Amino acid sequence: MQTTQRETPGFTNSRQYREYAVRHLANGVSSTPRTAQLPVPVAMDRALDAILTDVDGNDYIDYTMGYGPLILGHNPPEVVAALKAEIDKGFRTASVHRGEGRLAELIAETVPCGEISSFVSTGTEAVQLALRIARAATGRTRIIKFRANYHGWFDSVHVANAPGNDGPGSGGQDPKASENITVVDWGDAAALEKVISSDYAAVILEAAAVNAGCFAPPEGFLQAVRDLTRKHGVVLIFDEVITGYRLALGGAQEMFGVTPDIAVLGKAIGAGMPISAVTGSRAVMEALVDGRVMHRGTFNGNPLSVSAAIACVERLQRDGAEIYPRMTAQAAAIQAHINAEAAALDLDVCANGVGSAVQIFTGVRQMANIADLAKADRSRIVRLTEMLMMNGLMPLPRGLMYLSAAHTDGDIEATMHALSKGLHAYAT
Ligand code: PLP
Image 1 (cartoon, helix red, strand yellow):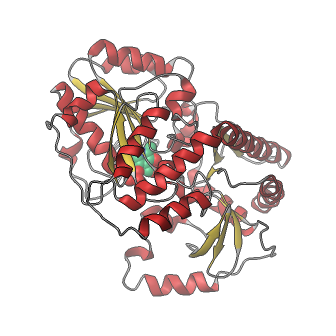
Image 2: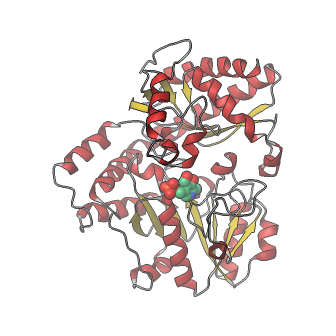
């Protein structure tokens, strides 16, 4: 789809909407990071394929992709058809239905660790369930997490999310809730070896650190984590809320060839509908199967979300051999273009990437590994993404860009021009 070209987008309707929304909606948004956008949080009206259109009629080539879930783009026909068919059968929320068994079977066919699955609505909830299963399975309580890895907003794991802050990520968190969390540097197997012991129930990590800035795991890191967790009888949990069905059909565990005991899936599995999953080996998931772990939720496995997820995974299973290499090549081209343009303009800007995700950094010219994160100047990224938005691209305000199966060669070509113009505007 072609975007509507315009020199300077106007945001009159977005501004008016914001004035109206803040009267009764806290901060005018439903998730805090959405306020970050400059010059104003843009209100969206509609979307199709890779194009988002805002309430002022401005079109953008979308790289937020719903903050990750829209792996097939906006309104993929097979998902829309599945949803329409499901609506006609009545919502049947909280009922047992045939779809949930089929989706669990699809996960078993596609995700290496995915023998037994269970569904919830969000990634945050799925992480809680995974930790509960690990604790019940081992009879231990302590958990190891890694710096700058994000695992949702619940108190126990919402610590050490951002570089330079090992504490809570929000005011109002119960400090006691994270007492049993030990924080270690991501990518550093020696640091993990120093702290891990048979006191721990689980090690949880983003196998590819997308939230930190799209870092692939250093050579040998995941295997070392696997070996150490096995040695101490600790449950290994990959948080694949972003990477599941995004980096590869089988997620990061397929891409990097290391199988955890449990994976948390979210975002892409539902193609935009709210659904997440905990999936793992029968041995570990037995703690849930035999009832030691209580798992509740009115909306868990709701037929609408499940029907979308089935349509999405079936499409990825059918066409993944074409979709994944194409998205990865597009992301690599975008990353290379940003780096080349930044160098040509003599800018303190660079891009990193893993699979179909790209992270732009400001304040640095190179991001060799996660240890360099402290050198980035996060305060300037929103200004850069504003310049990209002004030129018809919609990355996340923090500079993350997601590809989808709906991005065409034409979209990528238009993106290259817009990146050049946006970086030039940022430079001046
Ligand atoms: N885990 C990771 C790696 C995530 O990136 C996120 C969300 O971005 C979550 C967990 C939480 O998922 P949700 O926002 O669906 O609660």
